[in-house]
Image (tube, rainbow, N blue to C red; front, side):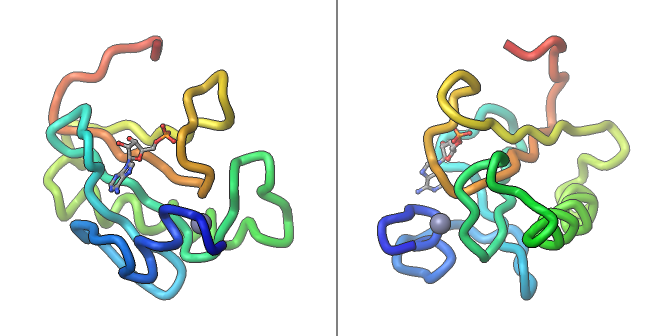
Length: 114
Ligand code: AMP
Ligand code: ZN
């Protein structure tokens, strides 16, 4: 996607602080962190929102969930615990329309979410 911020980050056209990368997945530190560990985990393939996940592209979502425990382990939050959040569309506060999974940890996380 030409005008997608996260596609540009994957291509290296916009800088990011990489946390993890494999054939399907890219992860980088959030520019405005809300926790000591706040990493965005995204598929290299452009998918706009969770609403666009289907049987045809859900393999990359599985790859994301394989990567997350590795990233959590590398950043020391596996044992204490962490949260994974994906905001879908306006009511949930999605601002970047390339599906992403916030990996949050390093502090006590309250529940229910706001
Ligand atoms: P959401 O509101 O769920 O769509 O999350 C988008 C996230 O992207 C926010 O937490 C932003 O802080 C983050 N973000 C926006 N631009 C950048 C960027 N250039 N590098 C890293 N994170 C970004
Ligand atoms: Zn994109």
